[in-house]
Length: 494
Image 1 (spheres, rainbow, N blue to C red):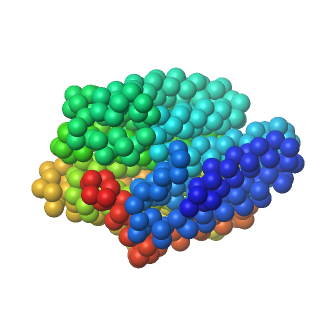
Image 2 (cartoon, rainbow, N blue to C red; image 1 turned 135 degrees about the horizontal axis):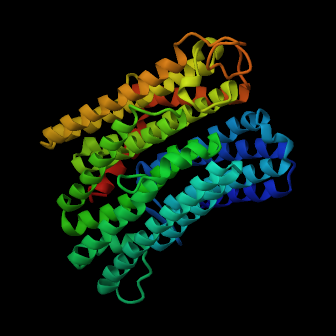
């Protein structure tokens, strides 16, 4: 266990440092190998943490809940590392080796920071890790060097920094609450704080939780502190967009769940669930409406991310065990589906040279692999069977109904259906229409030739489809046990 934790903390950082000196063509295979090794290491944690309680190793703390988020991040890290080899080979910037070097350094350090955050057993170190994700990802958003990318990165830094300042204030209040019971030497370790939760001052805990939701919610992309997200996801290099959406938002939500555990243990579950419900409904409503009228397919996928973060918040607000299991399954399924969708969007950009929905047509005809795979990713995001998101949303709705939240569950279904129309109609327009031919109005691609930009950009998407089918049809028994233990932890029963 110690060796695995240290490897997860060290290997991606070393890969990022190695990219400083390695030739750019060598950094890609190194990144892909480290990403795959990280995923295998996290898989090795599942059997142990599915049966045992928290393992604390100094400042590192690993439990079933943290492994769920490590699994989502490490899977995307492996897929994106492989995908990026083909992405950069077809990139117009490949003549500038400085771009490639900065890309590989940033990608590895970004993955490292997101793997480090769930391993932190200390609320202060958790805040620092998420702050590091902001610094590294902001540089990656600006990597393209365009005016739009610089503006998106600046907006992201301003809003995320403001949000994390609020989260830091919430962390300070958590320290004050802990020191009130545990003494001035208390160092913000999570386990002692959770154990002492019933004796913490209620008003301080309430305030710390609200500040944490508002602060970390900025990084999650919850309404109304979501405004950086569509710009950043649209302007970032496509592999970075996949990690931002599939992993960073979830890791930030993980921080909220840690504060949720403390608040529920002290205040009961009603207050923290009501707070998450308000943020979740607002996020789902906003995303569903905005998805009906988008012209940029990367911005469309960004609003889909806001939708799914709202789904996570609503699922936790239901509180029922089956809903919480659905939330954790949704973290994994959304990582695979949104990673696939953004990687598919990257192929469309290479093929058509544009992010404009109206300028893309005939995707299924011109992209024999990526066209169908992108369609599958959209269908998975729309929660159609037999993919993992269908299973997770079904569990969330079932949990809402079992907890007598019938009205909220009905609103949830209606808004998810609206989002379904926004995504599916756009995908149909891009993929099922007749390919534009040379000379046609709006034809912007080099020609109607059939073929893939790179096989490297196909293989990891196939892996994502396999993951979605496994999660939707029959999740492995040990993974189910892991989710059950994580649910018990969220409900204060671990």
